[in-house]
Image: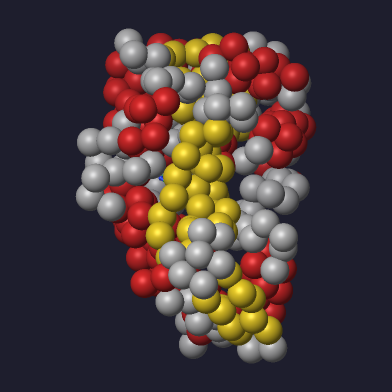
Length: 310
Ligand code: AVI
């Protein structure tokens, strides 16, 4: 039986607790079932969604300078590694002795690693399950120089307090050596931001709505996708894109042992995607305890790649 078909009481409780709040909200981690992961990959190819290709351009243009700044590292720890494509692109320049791929699901990582291991037999590779909301600890890597890698502006999906907690945790685990290489999306023209989350093809809408299918399987809810629509706006006060699912009808959603009424127009919050100015992001890294911060950006100043030393 796959993990998905085994009822997981903890996840069910988390989902129902989120749905029954006054402002219903579901964690963005529930986007990423198999279809959701493919839809996210499709998003990264959209003309409107500039972050992925802009980060790649920065990494290609400044790859050498970035590698020189980082210097030698024993272990490359890839946070939210997914298919390991971005992490493995650093192997030739950083030459790590060991690669540790971390993500919520180990199954997916192991597949990616087994292919990579043949190409890079000299690098010791390991997949590890990891929830970045929880405390990170690597007792087997004490005294080894660690480079953490967190690309794609995934940090934007944490609120700034949670981002600060994660950064402090990384500083602690680095034990005064190594650091963090991270990509983050910058504040920009609101039209550009809004278009990136409201693409004409409707892939982001499908990505958002697919979460309901995932919830139907995980929590046995009976969401009818025909009664929900994608809604994404830029919150100018909080510098974040907010994504919601909006009810298009008066309706009742039921699950074993409960139900909730939604009026037409009611919202379920599904994601925040924070955008930073370069100054704010660098000062967030410094306030977490990183010593020096080196930054690289693109000519439009759309995206930032930073290396912070622990
Ligand atoms: C994964 N994360 C950085 C994406 C973002 O831009 O916040 C997720 C996403 N949501 C809608 N489009 C992309």
